[in-house]
Length: 108
Image (spheres, rainbow, N blue to C red):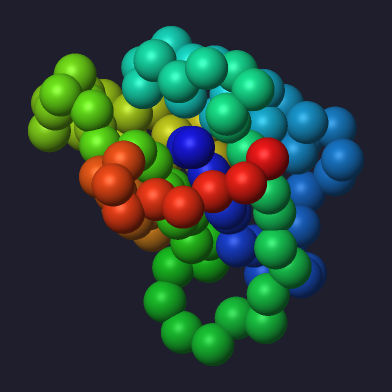
């Protein structure tokens, strides 16, 4: 963890180059602001059919740590919002979900 999933409407999916830039930004934010190990960061994009709401939805799942305080998470979300807007030109709704280590069962 963290896992960053970004849902973008099919007709608005940026170029591979812009997605690579956004992936790089996400990895930097996860390893820098959230202090995650590089090998634990995952970033994926999902093509969606827009129903209602913001044009982009970003979901971040992460392990709760004492240093990931509300101010740190606010800094992370603000920077992620800026990165998404810069790379896609779209406004994102961002939701972050923290999980205690005892509630995470993982493999690979």
